[in-house]
Image (cartoon, rainbow, N blue to C red; front, side, top):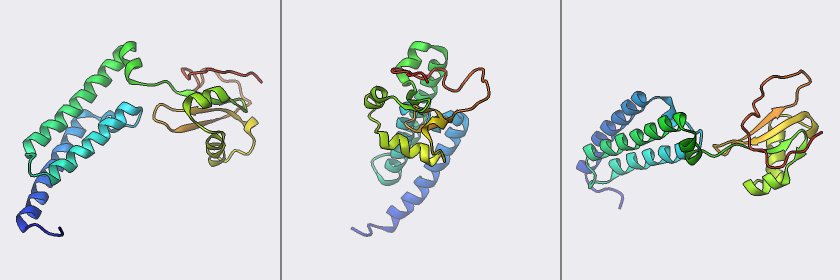
Length: 175
């Protein structure tokens, strides 16, 4: 059906505007982390918030107060889980995955790639996207906890701490 009634349209405008304002206010209060994409848990919360907003907008069965309560619950649970994960390694391990090294010092780590279901072509594509021609110029390619791939360029300068600290290395080759 293309059109139900003007009252339905007015409801979407009014309830949608109020739900949007409520969501923005709740997100501002909860902080930047609520909509981050640091791991799969964060992605789930973001998708759930969007789905809840759509339901509030389009379903007459969900009152605005119920929708705002759902927003508050999702944001509150996300805040609680992230607060606990910062304070407890055990909670953090349950919620977050570790980043995985897929290429190290120019060598593809086939076992890690197979375990993470990443193809050689995907790794090569991300290396090319970073403007690298030779794999030997790459210190590492990391599959991050949010599913993105990071390329770390090799440097000739001595380094102290590196961004590869804490990266899961299942198959390490030396060069």
